Length: 245
Image 1 (cartoon, rainbow, N blue to C red):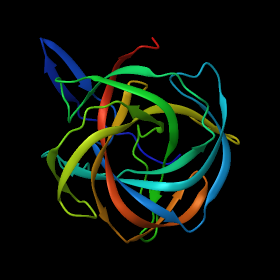
Image 2 (cartoon, rainbow, N blue to C red; image 1 turned 90 degrees about the vertical axis):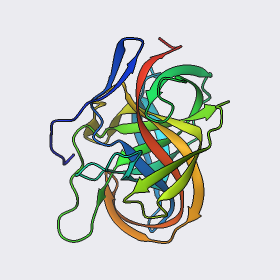
Image 3 (cartoon, helix red, strand yellow; image 1 turned 60 degrees about the horizontal axis):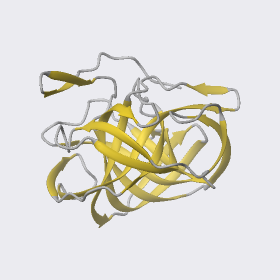
Image 4 (tube, helix red, strand yellow; image 1 turned 180 degrees about the vertical axis):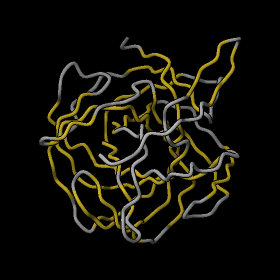
């Protein structure tokens, strides 16, 4: 997969004399748009995530959502943009409820526990095509499974997004997904999970209608997307531990 390696700046949280480092992800924040694809993909891949003992054959449909890097909480978007297409996992197998201990830039040290259940989406790196050569995929941007968060406390926090396709002043709501790195096998291609402790927590935003066309290429080929709503925010995070460990 195209991309290049770069030196990544570490973001540190200090708590009770312990330093937790969010070091590897090439993107801090991504806004998530619901989309209508010009070409709906139905494809089967094999995935192996944090809670899978072996590869799992997984049927996908989509993309249904598209995420793009933005700035937030006083941090500018990274110079190299990042994009992810969200594919629905069809007939996702039943999963037990699990408790994760996660540190992210919104909740910080005050609340680290989130409960998750079903894996509902696969997030696949994509490249935006504006003219000529598509944008490169940043090194360290993995594939991710998005697990549904259950029983999460609601937030009501105002944030300012920079570089957003929507309004800059937004209200942040409760966490709805945790996106964990996953290994993928697709025909003759293999995508590793480069940083197993990196993840994203996805928060609800006050929804805003949005109509814009994007041309992209991902592992399934060229596609066109038309946005419908600007509705979620991915926030970079680190997994501290889980009840499965």
